[in-house]
Picture 1 (cartoon, rainbow, N blue to C red):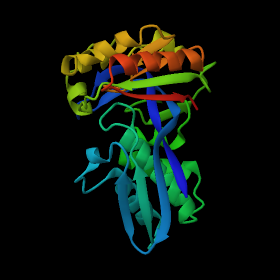
Picture 2 (picture 1 turned 30 degrees about the horizontal axis):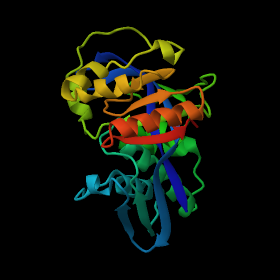
Picture 3 (picture 1 turned 45 degrees about the vertical axis):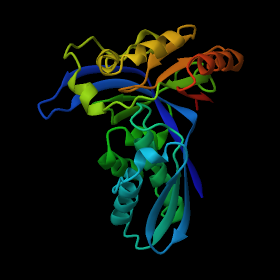
Picture 4 (picture 1 turned 45 degrees about the horizontal axis):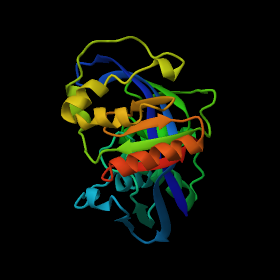
Length: 269
């Protein structure tokens, strides 16, 4: 069995406040690409995970991968005693603001629900996902969703013209720490998230550019798009185009000018 762990995009991300426990209240609009990591699973007596692909090295030595944590938690909650042989194709860069680990964990829940024949509905899986991280519930759904609270209070929404729209993801090869970026947030509430993401913003862009100034160069390279913005805490940026030809042309220009940057051509789900 196989599941796609779709790349998560924050079309806009407004930080509304910092709580006493250090967490932040946010309002965000999650959207998901057709492409991402790939998780495969086969029946086995024990639970195991093998990581392969272009960004596998970024998870080397990680003893408690979020996919395995998701699998163990699901088994614990459902009384499953069998295992699974899991293989993660790591196609997305690590610590890149596109929900790689969260989406991998969510894919693990979906895949093992099928592999172990649990028959759980999304509503049954969402509380388990919430225990794994603030973004995991949205990634479990992998549909356009408004997130509030810590990003885990979800309302499915529709953004006209988004489904199937060509999107280009660009990462300059710099990993940034989500915790560090949130710590650097200015503390100023710039106002609520509008219904139209074009009129939104990403409040983490400024602190992320302090840590990784190259993000500015990425956004400049995407300036001809209909909408270009940093996703999550960075450093990946995304750009929406009118059609696939415009997207592909932009990707070719960026690849020629910045051969060390990672790009992914996709469409929104």
